[in-house]
Amino acid sequence: MEKLKEEKLKKFGLHIKQLRTDLNLSQDNVALNSDKLIKATISDIENGKRNLSFTTLLDLAKGLGKHPKELLDFDFDLKT
Image 1 (tube, helix red, strand yellow):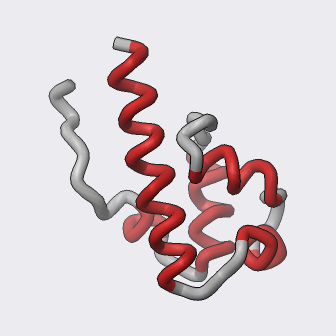
Image 2 (image 1 turned 90 degrees about the horizontal axis):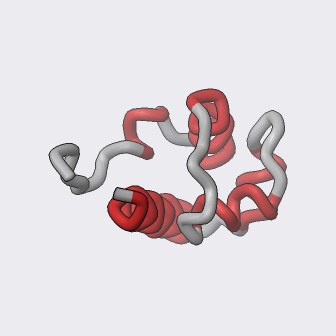
């Protein structure tokens, strides 16, 4: 079960990194645009090392200039 959780976090992290790079933003830019995030947190999220809270998701969306639902708009399997 833990392995599946790690895989989902990594997949989400790759999705976030792709969104950020598509926007030509550095992790520093995202941190500056958000309310409370720091570069290390963004790096952990992108590398699948952080299981983020709802408020962190909101801060990340703000930092990317995206609606939070766009951060969750990627393929993942809820059944596993």
